Length: 370
Image (cartoon, rainbow, N blue to C red; front, side, top):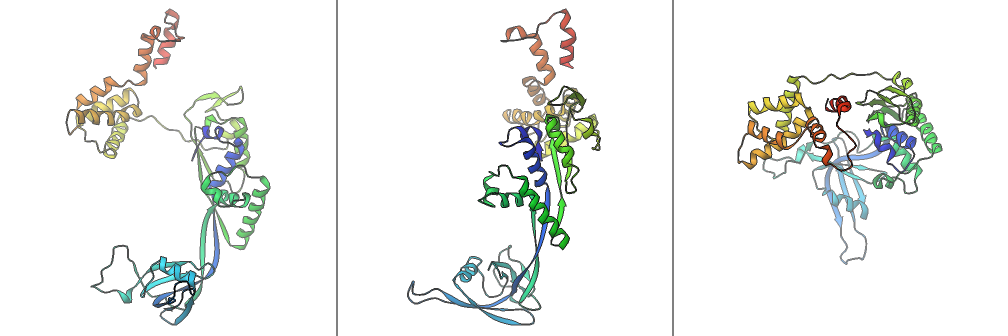
């Protein structure tokens, strides 16, 4: 999810920021096979040198499955990995052969006893069957943007943590798209298009809209959801007006969903949910009054009054928000209509006021209040 106004505050071009957002919303499932040693630990023997620093630690690891048992020699790094995972006899573990990573899968059912003192995090599993060494398919889920960053920066994946990705050259993206397409044909990868939500889309300019037109035609494009609360307004970067501030050719590519104003019952239900979320206990009469305020002003204003009314109730050492609390905060904090009316009444006392009240300005005043 991005806000359209973010595009103009980033230290990169607008189209580059949109492209990175698109590729962040496209996932890639990469499948690879690796050799894994999986079984139940029978015994761990570690030979420690008598003199410190005389020699590296060595040892032996005995593992078994339901069909076979094997003994493996341990080096210093493997002993350290087993020590970090606190592996002991009776644990079921998996060792990634290429990297040497040790993963504790759980505790064997054969070692479970009623009198054992175990924590709730201990998980009992069956002893693996088959051979100790087997090939497993591992699935890595990444985004196209993460692959872009790893292949375009000298620091590689560290740029993902610093956030300093910068602009990525088009040649790098083309090579990555070609490689991903090869993986798809070979069955090694799968494209998972996600969803990109662009809020305040009317803040984009004509250059960004032109980019969206082209990007949406890509076969790997994610589902794009845009939101706006504008009517017929000017398209940024042009002198032309269009519905929602979006060019007609882009609107033609969209499925437009309309939203209806909330009814009184809808506002009441939403306020009930907000009271539950904020742990505010409110009397039924106070809820009815707050619902009426939401209908006359706005839902956001009514939601803001919930916390303020709870604080007013707390100050008078009450436990349930009553009508008097709602009335008090309603008088303390103005909504947009009352604030505008107040400014019109006392505008002469404000500095740099450009409004002038006269017979010819009544229509403008009424328009602002509505």
